[in-house]
Length: 313
Image: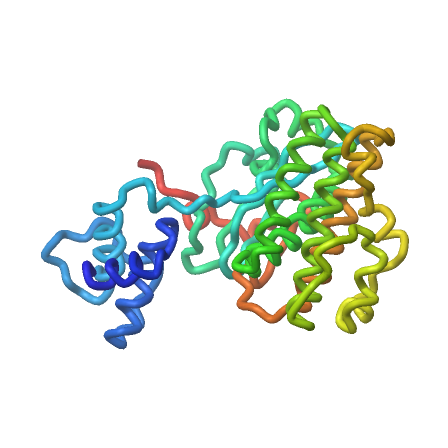
């Protein structure tokens, strides 16, 4: 394990995820096909059985790096609008498939992060920052569909950003997204929020142009001009209104043109759709392969608290 760790350090592999990558390389290098997660929790040091090896490998990295290895499960952010009340959405990173319910009764339930005999489960309401039990209980069931649509748009756009985060333009766009969300939520400058969302959309579109042509325009911020520079973007179905909603001038950024909260929120929604559409054009290994969303609690047959929840400790 020390040799594999040295390889990862030489390649500047991020601490977050280094344990999993060490496990993957060890398993592949020795042709073991080890299972993840381990089917044995806390094996004894002398247990070198097949099912215990995964736990031993991850324990080795955990002992060396401690909490620094922890994944940031919510590396990005979004917004959920409930009748004008804006909630900060923690956009989690997903590997494979995940199922989500909307269930106020399980607002404090500890869902298992890794699947055990079924895809992992979650609750959209838990990803909304500072949502109280009283507010969750008060949300009309008729609002659940709208919440799911907003949640899915944020997840799809950020999933594409995670996929292409090694591209500098996309990495910068993800920073713009988070900055815009914070500016909109804080209410300090809706113009700045709108500018950030425009920048996120622009940089993702330019990332497609760079992937297709090898270069991209360094100046110019008019979104409706960018599709003309890429045959891929031309065929991407970006309606004029969508581009207009996401567009912004520097004058709005500096307050020379007034921007309302509704205009900033419309820019956010349009940006998410643009980002998800255009980055899907670039080949890559998608971490998230599927979402199953329930506008209400999971059906009884689809949820088992013992299987889908963290064990009591």
